[in-house]
Structure formats: C-alpha cells, structure tokens
Length: 245
Ligand code: NAD
Image (cartoon, rainbow, N blue to C red; front, side, top):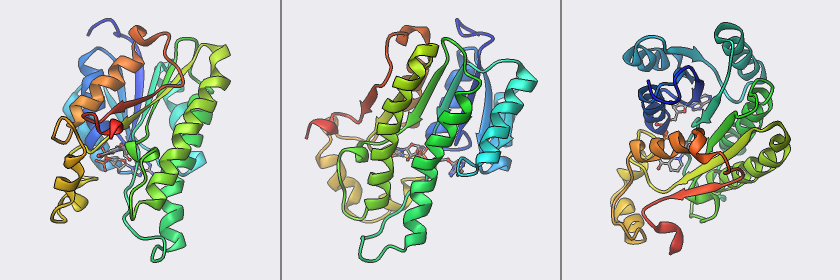
C-alpha cells in the first residue's frame, strides 16, 4: 500500500468499465476497496481478483434502502468510510419522439436520482477529509441527438455535485465529478458497433482516440487523494480535448 493505506473506498458500478478500473487503481494505491454493483456476481468476481482485504457488495443506486444499507454496512464492518466513487450508469439511445417514458425515467433514475441517494447516504458516514467523486459526462454540457435522457440526467448530476460540494464543505467533505468523453467500455460497445459513430466522434477529439478506463481511474485516484485537498465542486473534463470543440 501507499499513502492511502488503511483508507476505505466504496466504488459503485465497480463491476465494469471505469468503475472496475477505479477499484483496481485505488486498491493498488493502498485503499481497502468495496466493489459495489447492481450485478453482485460480477462485483464479487472483481473483488475476488483484487484479493484480500477487498470486498464486494450488491447495491442498486436507484433503491434508497439498498444505498443506505450499503454505507451502513461498510461503516459497521470496516469502521470508516473515506472515499466514494459513483460510476453506476446506464446508456440509452433514442429520439425524444420515439423514447418511452419508462426508458427516460430509468436513465434519470440511475444517473441523477442515484447520485442524490449516494450523496445523501455516503454523506452520513464520510468524515472530515472524506471525498465523493461521481461520473458525469461530456454529454452533461454537449448535447447529442438521441441522448436526451443521458445528457439531461448527466447535466443534473453535474449540478447535484456542485450543490453537494457546497452543502458538505463545512464538514470538510469534498465532492467532485469527472466528465469523460468516449471511453471504451461495455457501456459504449453498442454505440461503437454502429458504423461511423466512433469516427464521427473522434473527428471532434483533438487527441484522436477514445480514452481507456484506466485514464479515468487515475483522475478518480487523484481527486480522492490529499493532493486534491483544495478541489471541490469541480467537474473535470477528460476527453482528449473534445470539450474545446
Ligand atoms: P459500464 O456499463 O462498463 O459500467 C457501469 C456499471 O454500473 C455496471 O457494472 C452496471 O452493472 C452498474 N450499474 C448500472 N446501474 C446500476 C444501478 N442502478 N446500481 C448500481 N450499479 C449499477 O459503464 P462505464 O462506461 O464504465 O461507465 C461508468 C460511468 O461513466 C457511467 O456513469 C457512465 O455514464 C459514465 N461515462 C462513461 C463514458 C464512456 O464513454 N464509457 C463516458 C462518459 C461518462
């Protein structure tokens, strides 16, 4: 372990993609990691790969009892909570004219309402020096055709992050978000399979390639660390320069 030895981190959505990479990077830097996901089987596999003393938990960010129980359980079992990274997210592609209310609500439920529930219940257990990092998106401020639910929910999550940063500041808790551009993960695989989409996207990415989950995880590590002790309410763009265009 490194400087963060002994600290406890919970990674929601930790079973896949960016969350999984974040769990691995935090573990490599000395955090004790709880890999939490709606898919508890996959979360257990990821935690198993990390080995001791890391753990997994089944938790659904859209369910208040589940989120409350996750953080109460971590606090009861491990005695502390230092960092929370909320990477839970679902995609959706659909024009407003065609999208069902059910699908729109499902996306808002995971990204925005889930962000609220995580802030509410992690906030009960984070102490002075505690940190919450959420995964927003470049789409929070860059609209896309077929992305009404996703863009709107992420825009809400970015604002929620800043309100939480204000409210938690007096308790010495920092709250930030990362806004990635296109990152190669299971989430983006369906869109990447549509001919031309990746090429179109990368035409507006100065560095000319998609990001890796590890590149986002390194930023999560930084935001969780004491090196970022004066950063709160920040929405960090990581996108190969796409936010400029
Ligand atoms: P992913 O699909 O690989 O991983 C997301 C994880 O969240 C999965 O393990 C899934 O089971 C879990 N999850 C979904 N709903 C959940 C719920 N209700 N409760 C708990 N867990 C739940 O996706 P990813 O690409 O790693 O994305 C991680 C986050 O980053 C998401 O919030 C996504 O919107 C955001 N993001 C991704 C990209 C990208 O290009 N991949 C870009 C910008 C933002």
